[in-house]
Length: 230
Image (cartoon, rainbow, N blue to C red; front, side):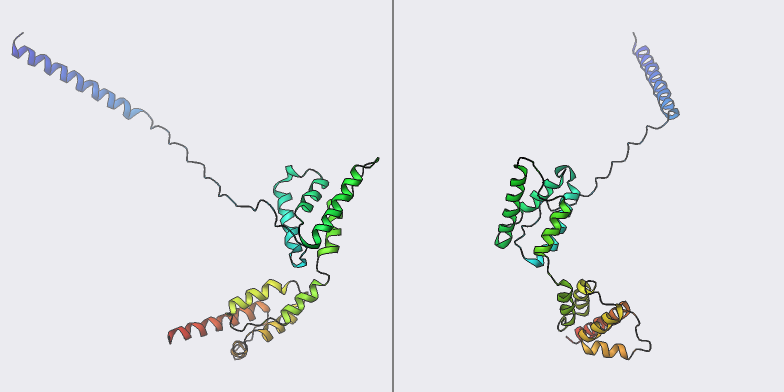
């Protein structure tokens, strides 16, 4: 085969391949685009939950915290506590040290004795009954009087007004005082220069929230002004 014939054959082969490539491209153009991959499912943030309550040593100031921690455990792990007895024994297992350990051991002995008797019964009819006994022994007897004393002696002093308000709000709802009484305590325990500035306002605050907001505003302005001279 002459060189001219070979070149002609090669040219026809190239033309055929080009036509096939054009046909393939047209076929691709007529097909729908492939579906988009599904969006990844967002992973919910992990919430760290304290696994076990703190040991309770009988300190009356920690009794409510211990009760709250038990509530969280029982609520988040219901499969582990299918009856009242399991809840009671779990709570008792964290009552250690000091006078509370002797009390807890006595309750455990009573539970064991009742269960091993010829006619087994529960020492406590329910977990609520156990908590009633717990409250009688370990809750502060006059918590309200203690909180009222605390708010009456709370002072702003060197605290910023925001810090003072945070301390005030942590206990105000426990006093059972109405808003008028709480306003009086707030004005007495907040630094006097701040309260004096509020009394120079054209319109005096009428609610506790307004008194807090005004005091914090004047305090922040004063501190910003002090920084300008440093």
